[in-house]
Each structure stands twice: as structure tokens, then as C-alpha cells.
Image 1 (cartoon, helix red, strand yellow):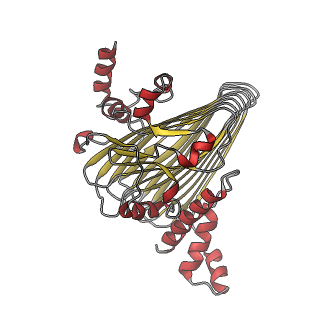
Image 2 (cartoon, helix red, strand yellow; image 1 turned 135 degrees about the vertical axis):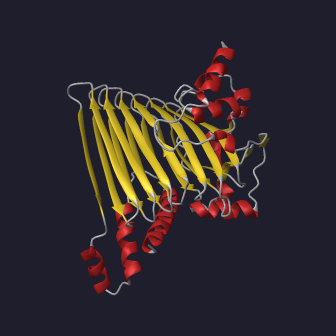
Image 3 (cartoon, rainbow, N blue to C red; image 1 turned 180 degrees about the horizontal axis):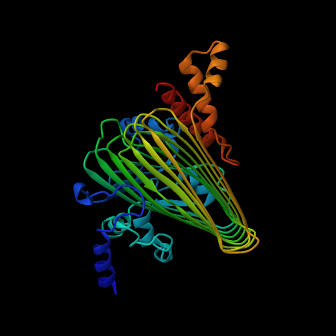
Length: 406
């Protein structure tokens, strides 16, 4: 049986993704994975982390993966009083027998060549987070995944389990330092939000113009649970393609918000699918897209009602150059009478009258562009911890300043 699965996955290594440019995996090499039970934040890592606005949070990091080497806080000092665990998934497999039953249930290993490669060669490196029942973790849980050399493939498999009645805020930064021009990141994420639990997941991407990025995410939200996702990417990439799938149980909620700032020659194919799987479930997908240079963004969104619930999609785009492109691709499907689904989409440019008004108040043209762009990309995401809001604000300020330079 195991050999049959391996044969199927070897065949799947040639299976392209439904969306996004196809990548030749043989162009990238892998290192042997290493795990260190002591987390040391070096000066070099501090510089890298500053790209995603976490420069004030280095000492609060709980898990770091640099290329194929994982470091984690074995003592879990900041999380000890919550009895919350964070450790490499590979180690969690040895320590907790139930972990194996959770893996590869929400993301199929044969989905495409990227999931197949991760299953076959990833050695289950990535983080595992467990929050015990009826526990509210008031501090954010920070992790960082970085690629520091060229022609490398980074594989990560992350699993979060928030048990019944609990609450957690996880912040993950994915990035490369300046100078890395060619690499591939494949990240598999599986999140379980159990009955009446709540997970807020914030991801900030800062890659570079030669990097290809392929996250694959599945989320299961149990009865009365809530999942809030905030995703920001603001740097050039060669290509980015992600399409998380979130399934909701009865009375549960999901909110997915993203800010995509396309630049260079990058191709960004970013979307979210939410399935209303239980009655009285609710879903919202909001995306704000800006493009400059010759970048191209496909903003996808899909809400499918398999039960009586409510869903809304909002996609807004702002073109900042003549050569860039934005495509809004919403999809609504109802399989149950009584479900209410809606969407709105708009793509435009900065109105000249807005710039002229601000310039009449004494702002320079680039300052006026920055103010308009900053207002456009702002998304009101409820119940995010203040420290995380500050980090997001810093990144959004960077995006607005960069947009003003076009």
C-alpha cells in the first residue's frame, strides 16, 4: 500500500497546479534537514526579519526555519504558562502518537507536483502548534521561515491544532534576505479549529524577484469555531500561487483578508475558497490588490454553500502603471436553498482629483499618492492583537511608500 502511494506521488511530481505558472522542480536542490532545540537569533537573522516588520519581536520568536534547518524554543518559556506546545512537526511525530492521524487530511499529497515533492522529500520539517482545551493564549505565537541561498528548494509542513474553547494568534513571516535571486518555497499548512475555538493567522511575505512561492493550505473549522486569516505580500516575486480551502461547520465563521502589492515582472495568483459546510455558517473574503511595473495579479475567490449560510466576497484593485494587470475572478455557488451569497469587485486607478485635493493642502505628489494608496489597502480586521496590528501597519506603510515611487 505504501509503495503504491509512493508510485502515485512520483507520477504526481509531473502534475502542474491548476493555477499559476508551472515550475521545473529539478532546477532546485535540497539540503539534509537539521533540527536544533535551541533558538538563537543571530544578527544576520535580525536583519532578515526586519523586512517583515518583526524587528521588535525577535526575542519572542518560537520557531525559525532557515532553509532546511529548524530551530525552536525547546523550553517554550513564553508559552509555558498556557501549556501550549510549538516544535518541529518531525519531532512532534515522535512525541505525540495522534499527530500522524492529523497529517495530510486537509491537503492531499497528490494535489500537484508541489504537494507531492513535499510529501516525498520534505521530511515533515515545519512547525506543529498545539493549544489545549479552554486556553486563551493572549500573546502572539511567532514563527519565521527564511531562504538564505540561491537555487534551493525549501519544504515546510505546518500543522496547528486549537482545541475546544481555545484561542490563539499565530504570526508567520516568510522571506529571503536581499541578494537571494533564485529559489523555491513550498509550504503545506493544515489548521484545525475545534468546537467554539478561535484561530487568527497572519502571514507576511517578503520574497524577491527570482523566487517562486507555492503555499498549499487546508483549514477545518468545527461547530461554533472561528478562523480569521490576514495575508500580506509586498515584495517582487517570480511567481506566487496559493489557494487555501476552508471548510466551515455549523455556526462557524471564517474571514479571509489579503493585501497583494504586485511589482516587477511578478505573476501573483492568489485566492481563497470557503465551503459553508454547516447551517448558519458565515464567510467573508476581502482582497485589496495594487500593481505597478509589469506585474500581473489574478485575485480569485470562491464561496460554495453546501448548507444554509451567508457569504460575501469583496475584491478591489488599483492599477499604478500602464503595463501591470489585475484580474478579479469571483465565484459563488449555492447547493442549498436559503443560502445568501454576494460579491462586489472593482478595478481602477488613483483619481486625479484626489491627488489634486491633497496637493492643494500642501502635500507633494508622491506624498499624496502614498496617502491614497495607504487608505485603499487598509482592511479592518477585528480582534487582532495590538502588537500584530502594529506590525501589519508598518508593512502597509512600506507598501504605500513604495507605490508612491511609481
